[in-house]
Image (cartoon, rainbow, N blue to C red):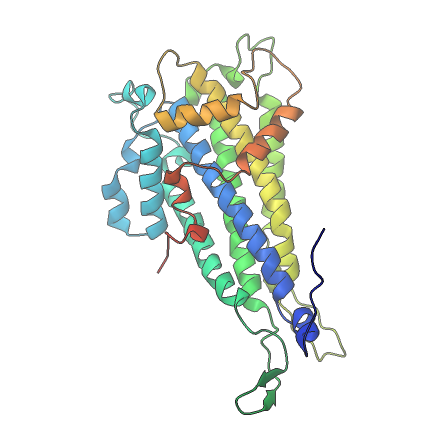
Length: 336
């Protein structure tokens, strides 16, 4: 690879093995994947809002200021920016429907809580990435060598666990919106989002796939940090399980990205039934990126390649500024 081997100095080998470096690195990787997923989940939610001609009232800034939750306020503003100028939603302003289902109406509340979780985890992991976490510690000013417990990765395990909760919820609410899109009685769209519904199954089995993945994540979201198993003759009698807690984030993000990708694909399909009306500029741009990967579903076809293409779509990082500005790694959102 052309890399110069790193020459370790005194005690550095022990520090690399004995500290929290591996679990912290895995947790940070999971955080970055979760951030991309979060942005994709918001975009998919906005696409679904357009597809069902949902109400804009639940995104009124006054509602969210009245509660004061930072993530909720930020998410409501981001969704409002995504849908600004939509002809589709504008055509539906005076609809008699009072309330949309929770999975659409409560996007700011649910996704805002997820954002606050990610922001808190990011703060903890940034501290840990710059920490001295090996044992013993050598204090050169005094020459003291002191044994302690900085190797215990409980902060990392807790951070990974709350990232896992956010990842699971992004997928869970996405799957519910997908189910809404396919239900003609609730969405007003053709059954299963396909013409000739008696002949074609449309997105029916894709929703089954999404439901299976969302349910799998519910099991994976069980906190790793509540488990512990003693080793080393009970000297190491309580451990954090941080490496597992962080490592499983990759599987969870993979699952939720597939769910979000399926929702986005289905929502883009639903929007096509409202033509010639146009969505907002940002939503139309998102539909363009989807159409670069998957075609409109005219009739039943093998959807596995489309689902994989959309999973990759949901895992990307080149989102509009309205979304990237929210992400903790960009340094613009804080729960403090």
